[in-house]
Image 1 (cartoon, protein in one colour):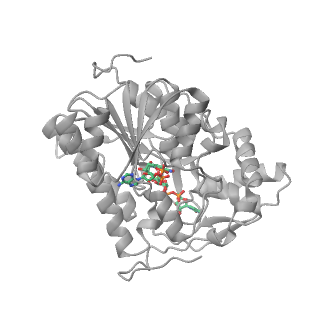
Image 2 (spheres, helix red, strand yellow; image 1 turned 180 degrees about the vertical axis):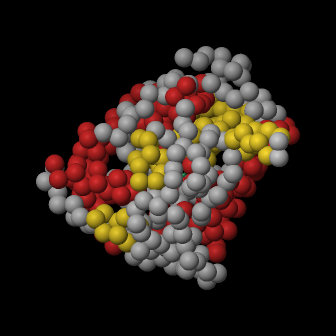
Amino acid sequence: VQTSSGNPFKPQRVMVIGGDGYCGWATALHLSNKGYEVAIVDSLVRRLFDHQLGLESLTPISSIQNRLHCWKSLTGKNIELYIGDICDFEFLSETFKTFEPDAVVHFGEQRSAPYSMIDRSRAVYTQQNNVVGTLNVLFAIKEFREQCHLVKLGTMGEYGTPNIDIEEGYITITHNGRTDTLPYPKQASSFYHLSKVHDSHNIAFTCKAWGIRATDLNQGVVYGVRTDETALHEELYNRFDYDGIFGTALNRFCVQAAVGHPLTVYGKGGQTRGFLDIRDTVQCVELAIANPAKPGEFRVFNQFTEQFSVNQLAELVTKAGEKLGLDVKTIHVPNPRVEAEEHYYNCKNTKLVDLGLKPHFLSDSLLDSLLNFAVQYKDRVDTKQIMPSVSWKKIGVKTKTVTA
Ligand code: NAD
Ligand code: USQ
């Protein structure tokens, strides 16, 4: 693997912001396993949201300190830990000066669309945390580590659901006889998804203005829980969100099937999105780091492997559940969101495959193992947390205490 930390094109030292979260934890271990020097930066604010909202991961998760201790004792590999908020620039500066990253993978944002739609204060928090955090990372790179490559987690939701094919970041348009390649139009549909649009604009601007090298990974919905590394020991297990605020479609459906709750399809269920296995999240990030953007380049990859509608996912989980002897029903819940429920959807996703991504497509065996995993932990499920509790239309200025 890579060796020289002096050569910016052979990144060796990787800072994983948000490394205590779902995607970040799996990625930090994967990169450490692959021989990178890894530092996790995290404020642990996600664990605080869970406490505040009365939520818990399906899987019991160890403290970040115990996680890292376990990793070191199993593999001999050290992962540095910096606990703090990247919106605090002094803290971020110190971590940059101490760790001297060649690449920063930035997962450290408030990532739930429903959370951002609870009330005004959560909407403002989400945009402040995400936009200011990313701006701070950009300033830290400019000031302390010019050659450092920013690998930023964006979202497929930045594009919305236009009635034309979705390209990877840019579209070539001919207008009144003139042609240009322009950023693909953005039509996000929550204050969270919009925070990612704002981030993308800020990153694109700093690539142009300061010569920052950046890759925006427009990731689809992630499913699954085990990766080679997190499966090594119970103390390394990843979080698995199934509740109505942080849980995402396929993972939620598996838990619902395991506890005999009907699958919650919102509205007509024709909503189609890009999806990927968490084992591919870690692979994609590794590929982006190993093949950095050029100075000044703002590169955009669409990071998903397959498209499914919510109805298709419900069908797949129903069939897989039947094989395991589960009686799986589906209900159409009035859609708490404002989104198209029947629409055209065709997205490009060739750039990561060109770099060598070998996708783990959704298979019967993965669904079996996810369902079995959910069954194994079903006594930990709080069924009151399953139905959606946040409405896009009812958001107001009054601070809301969300109760199940
Ligand atoms: P997560 O909530 O599990 O993890 C996010 C982590 O970032 C948490 O540990 C949290 O404490 C930390 N964090 C948040 N704000 C911070 C701050 N200001 N300073 C320091 N740490 C901070 O989320 P996840 O599911 O792992 O998502 C990670 C990233 O990937 C997010 O940016 C998300 O938008 C993106 N993404 C996730 C999915 C998905 O399906 N989970 C899909 C597409 C994109
Ligand atoms: N949905 C249901 N039933 C459910 C849950 C969701 O029908 O029980 C529908 C939603 O209405 C939506 C679709 O499934 O149309 C996806 O919803 P989701 O909750 O699985 O995902 P989303 O809110 O889009 O957010 C998640 C992550 C976010 C990431 C995004 C990628 O939380 O961080 O950015 O997936 S994407 O969807 O491509 O924008």
